[in-house]
Length: 312
Image (cartoon, rainbow, N blue to C red; front, side, top):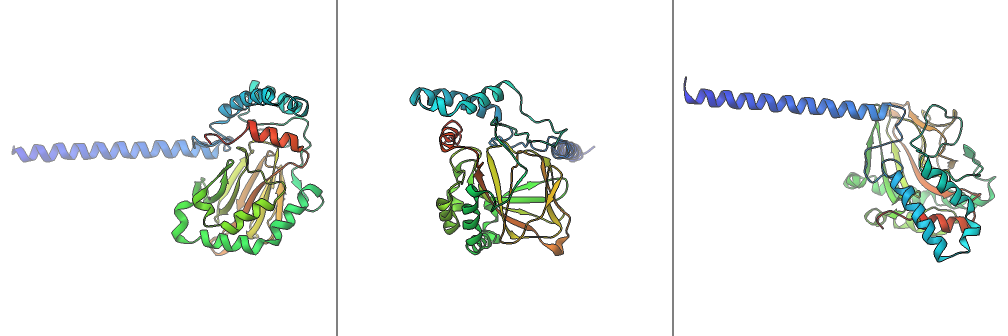
């Protein structure tokens, strides 16, 4: 046979094998991803920098070491931070990867501060320590919404982090991500970022603190999962609300209201369901992590030190 025939045959076999490898690889990773998102361990992800998931063991070990350093530097802290020390000892000895079988109680995945009173939801105005921050955020809702409209433009979509689920997807735009200021994003939201300095309880100097915009698209389900710690209260300021989109915490369902704050402790099992269609649009909120009101200022300072942002 002609020499060209064998060349074409060989090229065809190589192409066929390459397509088979690509197909099988695609099916494998799709299957693996589906397992991650559809299983009861949805709270875990594959981001190597995620403190809540992949790196929680390193975070606890590092926190124990920094606690010892803190006690050496300031001996008076020992008397103020006994329950932090107790909690670190417990957390370091037990795997906190999360038992998802029981969603009736708080089950933080990384750091569980013992003897801390926790509720699923917090009334924004009955909790005196959080009320001023809620009023500040709601009073500046137009400014925050204006900044959201800016960063939501197509030219800035590359700055958003996108998350996929078996049903739909959602995306987030961080101003503060795990205690670190995202400089490129902040320059687009200077007015909103400036507001944070006026909040008394914003958590912005440790790995558990985040400030971000969050958009959930129609048809999206964010499966039941637990947050990393019970020391924070998540504050959601409604920017664009959808009646068919709801938050469920330990079986209790709530819906966002435009211009109002919704406060909950995300160490309880929680999930989001957007059952609307394209005509309903996306749900958009501004999220600020606030300190749990029962944590003292001394404890805040200690936690900021021992859980300072990683690689900062």
